[in-house]
Image 1 (cartoon, rainbow, N blue to C red):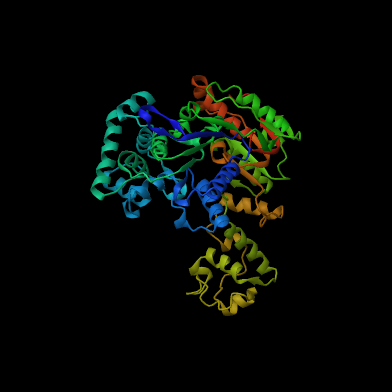
Image 2: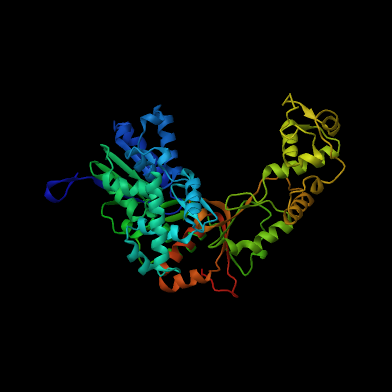
Length: 509
């Protein structure tokens, strides 16, 4: 144990740097196992992260291996959840989506979209620029006027101040706190549990305010493990403070063997990462297989019909043309891990055609069909919820549905029967049918690089075009742009396809 100023004992700080695919999560889970085996009490061990995924994985592993319950592991939490717990804050006191909408209505705030839920790790997503920037100022622990003057925002100081004051007044009147309040209030007044070990995951994504929460947790700890990778810090735009990790003092360990990136992909990634000026130096190596790296002028020159694909860009609009091409080819795909058309609708279309071919179909399939049929013209009253279906294990023909289960509309194609399908989606469904892909699982995922962070795929297509904002950022501070494309390139397990359209400003690889 280290001794700090005035004879105060400081925890042992261990910094674990995990380049892409080096097993950072698995390493942390081994540390959890080791600490629990060495008689660290489960209520003396904290595992904190920005994301629910990381904390849930660690908690579930400890529960299974050591026969613990959730109550036995009270400090395996996101930082927001940690603050809420230590402040004894009730769920009813937390600002949720409905509260923000009420705030917008009460105060005449222009806000058409807002989402605030635990599943998003305490991030409030909204189209209101004032709220986004106000939250970022608090995450950076900056006074509002200082933040406004530094960021060169596209609205007046008076508008910004009025929005801040309105939100704070609403929270005060309704006894509400937002996710950022959970952090700041914990730093100011929160009760600190007696912890022996604190493990912090995804450290490169923490804001200064989140680091202050961690510092408070370190206060009585004997050992601290900080895990992350400053080269993958791509959320500075959201308030993350990567310099904190870069400048941190402690015992450093680099996980140096990637289990994801083949040799040629690693070579490309290493060339990108060496452009980053402000970083912790680290050396790592790729898998002992070559893999492949290819350059293309246009995405259409890449055949994505075989294998699993991750198509990456810095902004959503950059793969819109690619999406149109996938629809024409009748290829199933996802956008940011979400289906463009629900499985239920595709199944309803397929089931409708099968019924008209004389097939018998399951209760579940019929239920999907009924959920998309217009009640007044296609179904008798009371059948929308399948009330007349008694045996869920039975199968039904179109005659059964007509005679016994309220089906009226039959001799029409599916695009007439399901009259709520838009023209563009209907055309895509026809293409899926033409290529026999209507029930196929998507093997293509189009995503922003930020959403794909932490993921991997056999084949990666990397679109290197930059938005005008990205080009300006590149001119002012290239580190962040280099980090983004470093993350993008290192998602590839087998092949990396780099799209460099010379007609647009782009990132050079």
